[in-house]
Image (tube, rainbow, N blue to C red; front, side):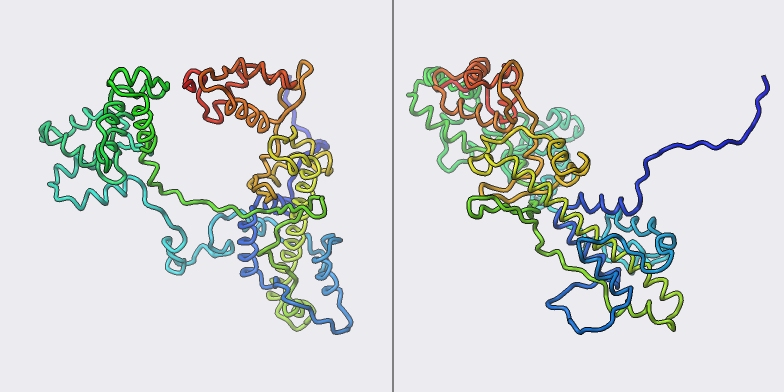
Length: 484
């Protein structure tokens, strides 16, 4: 059979994301701080944008078509006006939206030939905290050590994990430094272990706590012996066995337990290069007249308009052609940015308002009354797609009268709705499990099966493994270890 070539027409449908939609999606996912930063950067790069400061001059005069269109950019009826004939076809949206994808602080329109000397130094753009390894090495270099001993100590520090423990056996480190004798390596290890924070470079928790116990102002032999021999018994709250082993009273064992609880089992966590991330709420919820009112955080978000100075260049027929084209492009960019910001704020308000209407009991009575809710519920109510709701709720926070919560916190699939039980949100289930454990008899703690049975009396039907899962998520020990 011969293979022939022929031409033909075929119609197909495909999903395309326009550059305008890409920019709108980009703005939706930004946090409040990221959006204000982006607006500030765009105001620097786009001369057509300026902030409305105070009252605008209301001198009656005949307005041109360009001025009317620019005003429409600040109203809710914005429909993307065409200021110049054929503007949509001539404007390069690809290059414009690429500028919003940049994660650096330099201008997206910067030419490739820009000299590195003209850019701000890297040190002026980022900062880095001191890591645990750097903190220990800084102290170590103040000691008067030979190069061989210094290298041995640096080898120890280099094998310490974030919690402060050695990641490899100490004998393996010793094998790399055959010139040092046993007494010397033991002394050097002790020196590293007593650097701040004390207890780092230990091989297990007994050694870590023992090092800290030996430097206490009121050193207690009983505390050190319990750490060394009976830490497992202390974990099980077996005070009788510990008291019998050391010939002391239960009260002294409990006093020793309080001292041990004051020690740090993960000293490495005291030094971290990670900085605290502060949250700026995107939505505020306040109770006014018995009703909850939603307000989008507009603090720091400037009211934008198109600059009258640059608009005049479009009307001036004597303006340079290249300058006129530049102003036209920047004008369209400014109009679409103003629309995108307004749409973002409206979308966030719709989603937040819908959440507040659905979760009235949560805001009135607390997290225990959080209702099961999924993205589809909110999307159907406000007439948007689930993906849009997901983008709106990502990294956004809501400040309420009972605390600040991430918007994702309110979305929980229903649990326990089968076999005639009632639906309950995961967060509410956690609180009910915790409530039962807090009120249990310390001598007869509730097992996971017993908790499941008690919940069933409240019409919450959950399996034992589900109780165990949520108990572990709250870092609560099993019943065998909670017994006192």
